[in-house]
Length: 459
Image (cartoon, rainbow, N blue to C red; front, side):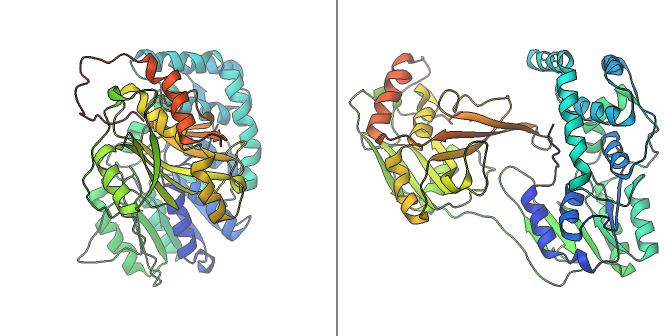
C-alpha cells in the first residue's frame, strides 16, 4: 500500500530545498492530499514540528486523524459493505479506507476493472494487513500538530490571522478532487465537512490577499500571472502538468526542463525485411539528434531529459531505435544503485515484429554499457527503467525484464512500473540473433504492414 501524492516528488524536493521553512513560525498546509509535503517538512523541521494540515477528503482526513491520535465514526456501505468484518478499532478502519481508495480506480465498467475489483475484494484481508503495517510506521515519517477537515480557504484565512506561513497546493481543475474521491464518498459514511466548491480561477484573488497580508507563503499551481508576479520555481517534466511555485522567498530557483533537437536525414528500418543474418550496430549518438528522433516516435507532449550517453540502433545500416542511459539514483529491488544504470529511454521506430523488445534487450548488453562503466568507475550489473502503462504490466518488457515494483499515479491514471534486468555478457549481434529466433521469427506480417511505414512503438 504506497502513500503517493499528486505533486511530483522532484518538485517537492525543489520546494523544500528553496523555501526557508525553518524560518517560519509555523506552517499551515492547505490541501494536504496524501501528506507528501508534510513528510518532506518533517525531515527538515523534525518531529513535533509546528505543522497544521488541512483537507476535506475522507482519504486525507483518516490519515490526519491517525497522525494526530484523533478518531471519528466510519461506516462502510454499498460495494464496501463487506469490509465491516475486517475492522474493529479506528486504526483498522483507516487501513480499510486506504485499501478502498486503491480499489476505487477499478470501479469502472470494463472487464479488466471488474476483474481487479473482484480480486481486491477476494483478497481484502491480505491488502488490509499490509496497509495496517504501513500505518504502523507512518507516524515515524510524518509529524503534524493538528489536522483540520475544512475548506482550505478557511485554513488559509486562519493562518493569515495568526501571522504564520502558508503552504498551499490547491487543485488545478475545478471538481477534480470530488471526482477523484467520489467512490469513497458514496461507499463510506463519515462526518464529512461542508465547503464551497473551489474554482481555480479564484486563485489570483487569493494570491493578492496572501501577498498583502505579509505572511510567508508557498503556493503551487499550474497558473501564471506574468503581469503581476514571477514564479520562484517552474517545474515541468514528462507527461505531468507544469508546476509553478509562488513564494515570498527572494531567492530564485527557477527550474526548466526542456530539450533541444537537431533534425537529420535517416532511413527507418522495415522490420519485415530483417533476416537472421542482419547486422546490428549500436552507435553513440549526440543528444540533440536523439531528441529529434524521440520527438517523432514518442508522444509529442513528453519533454525529454538528457542522460550520460545515448545510442542509435541500426539494423543493416537503417535506423531501428535509440537508447539513452543515466546513472541510477536509487536502488530498485535487487538492483543496487551502486551497480546499476537507468535507461531513460529505449525507443523503436515501430512496434511491428516486436522491434521494441529488441531495443530493450540491447540495453542490457555488456558491450553497450561497458563505456559507461568505465566513465562512472563502477561495475554495472543491472539496468533499470520505468514504464507508464494503462495496464498493470508492460508488454515491451514482459519476459525480458523483471517487474520489481508497481504503483498507480492518480494524476496520470496510469501504472508506474519499475523494471530491472541483469547485464548480460553478450554482444549486440548475439542479442539480435536471440531476439530474432524467439520473437521476430514467430510474428507473421499483417496486412497493414507496408513498406517502411513506421508506427509508434508500444509502451
